[in-house]
Amino acid sequence: MPSPAGRWAIELTAERRVIGGALLLPLPPGNEDMEIGWHLRPDMWGNGYASEATFCLAEWALSRDIDEIFAVVRPGNTHVATSVRRNGMQWVGETDKYFGLVLQVFRRRLADLDRAAPEAEHPPFPQELDVNPQWEWRPLASLSVRRVPLRLTLKPSSSPTGEVDGGWWPRSMDPLAEFPAMIAGVTDRVGPVSRVAYNTETWGDAPRDMVIDGEMVRLEGIRALDPRTVFVSGRGWQRKTLLVVPPEASENTAQAALTSAASPGFRGGAEQILLAGSTDGSAPDGTVPVPRSKSSEAGR
Image (cartoon, rainbow, N blue to C red; front, side):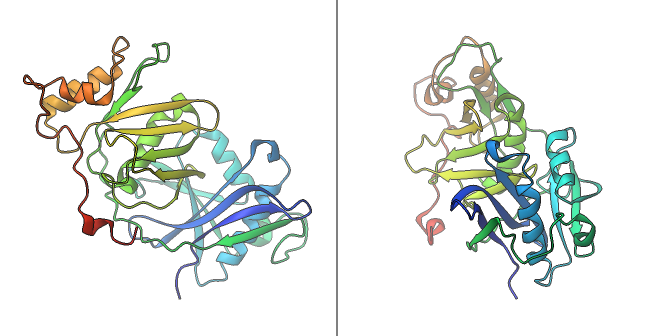
């Protein structure tokens, strides 16, 4: 039997209005543990809708031959941790198993449903809310769990706006391996990240959504986006454009690019930064991300 992975819209049935979403996705590496995530419109917070919807989703998932579901949260993110506990998840410890980050782990098992259920009965779906399945089966790329420093620089918050707001030197072009740490690194500046836009010609395959700290992040692949950048936006008006230094760049080239991208007085673009290390105006080796082969794009 396939794992009960999927994405759902949370809808107020009386008004036929979508107010948020929920998902169940396998946690890499191994894709053996199932992670639950949810997000509601801010004006819908505090009404018990998340607890009701996640209870129904958990009840449904735990009847599909899995023993437990998880949520992972960065240490210190008390807002999300409180929300996770309020929605019936039990804290079970800390691990660096997922995404190469130290994360707090919360778990829900079938036995937990009795003591964590909403005040109402236990219907298969609540009367007020519908959780509508939107199935999308997508293989997840393998993910390294090495603990390595995040190579990210950001301009000071008070700096004038330029074409890029900082630089990032990933170790691969695998979104599932690289995006979680990058998202965690910019959260203090943009708040909870809601969207990451990236160039599909240079980055590997990725699902449409990723769960970070219990929050869903939309991954939007855009062919026309500058392959030297990624665009990160929060749930408000905060946005950051990051220079992407190719993984194969030399140490000197990468460090110079990261420094320039984060310099308050530098307002040039990604191409100008990456070409700055060349004496003849041509791109030195490892300064432009290499497009994927056509065969790697099959099925997209």
